[in-house]
Length: 221
Image (cartoon, rainbow, N blue to C red; front, side):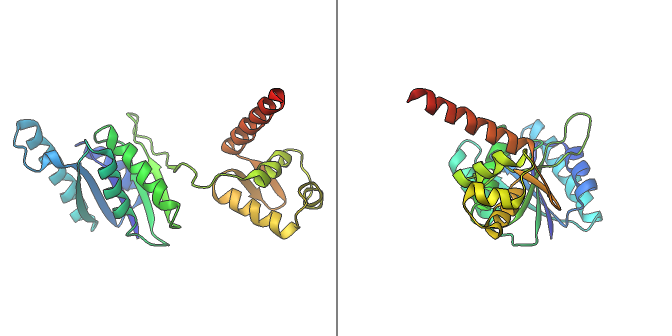
């Protein structure tokens, strides 16, 4: 199943553009609970926008669910969203549409998705639809941090070392090195293409930060 979870601010186009590219089977609208009982004119327009989106989804055979959260209580909101995301299973594809909503709501969605992905292997992407209406999904913040061995391995990748050389340098066997490389690839730190191995921008940043830390520790001694 493909699920779009959208922090909604009453802009239907942000939903439509994401769906055009993502082709969801289900849409979950994350809404502020202050909209439940409010009857002011601006809220009436908001309700009409929700109805427009719901009617669109009905025509496209997309199931719609609404979740109301207390945006003033960040912890409560994040736990509510985390419980909702935890319902999905391996094989489901989730798109977090962070384009709208109260400022704290998109942040809460990222927190909730990152938290659950630490305990459950689920496929989550994020997207923010800008004014030019482009669609460029991106990964959640990494939920795996390289350990000391990973960092040593990553520091040697740019030197085009063979696995046998890495085995000697790291003091671990080739199957373990391959396993670590695949894990680093899964979490966005390296790119593997056959025998070619290179760091992503994220991987380069982590290696650079680690070098800076090691230099500071060395100078402090």
